[in-house]
Length: 393
Image (tube, rainbow, N blue to C red; front, top):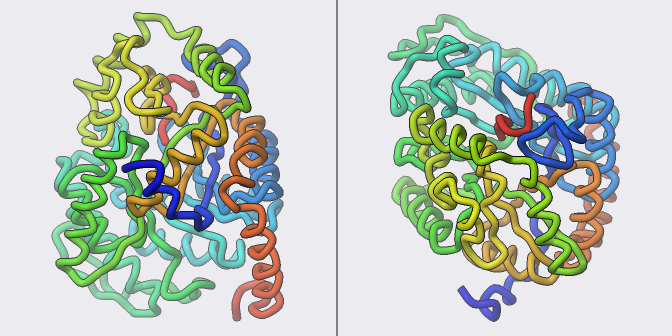
């Protein structure tokens, strides 16, 4: 993909940010200059993202994170237009209870709820949640869960006799603001995950990878969706280190991992290889191979975050013009949504918005979005009639 081809795509991207509910800080892998996971800080990040023009925010899930549903509920009442991408976890909760939670938070936020379907994870952590299914069985269970969940939010009384769920007369009496239900986002690199994505969800998410790998993944998912007569959108989760000067950007990248020891990197590498059954996690680890000297994996794509961090481990590093060029290349493949983050998240939200948004055309788009949100509010009324080194997300 050349810069010339990418330049043909000039539509504004949907740009999300991240609420660091597992903690935040200036460095990875250390408590030095770290910030505790406290609601007052989450509120600062959310209000900044709301005012700066981000479309929404992702809240991670896992044993090292504050609960995403409760946190999003608190943040939704102190923000005006920000959307909340919250974890929907089949296997951890029942589909009936999840449908009622969905309706309640969607109505409270006036339609600003999005759902991130989370099926995978660390098997050790899953065992702590009482989940002992194999990798592919978890996706089979999730398919039953989402079938029931959708039917409940469509207003059906559900009788269901499946392999994983048995329900009689299940109901959820309150409708969501958006119909038939809030949009479903999903990320999974395995074949079982991709099959669930095209059968049941609206947005397929990939972690930041080199263009060729992202293209291969998108082509595969798009072909699967076409065979079932469905169309699916695509998004990407990635970190950002953007500075006006390129050397400053790379110095900031080096500083981010300056306190990580070789022992930490080795322990993380062994954990990625032996404890995780996530295909996506293995793909992220394979980009750097546990080596500090192999972190530049594509133009401006740096894998240093993934030396110790689970989840997305890559960042786009460089000047605003360089990073926008990379984003346009991904956009030319079909990516229309970016879920970004950067350490620390409060300061980096300002850098990303101030340096990238004007070049991406997001400022003008946000002003129109604010006008639309105000119009919709008057039309529908209130309800529409841990440790950084181990952080997930």
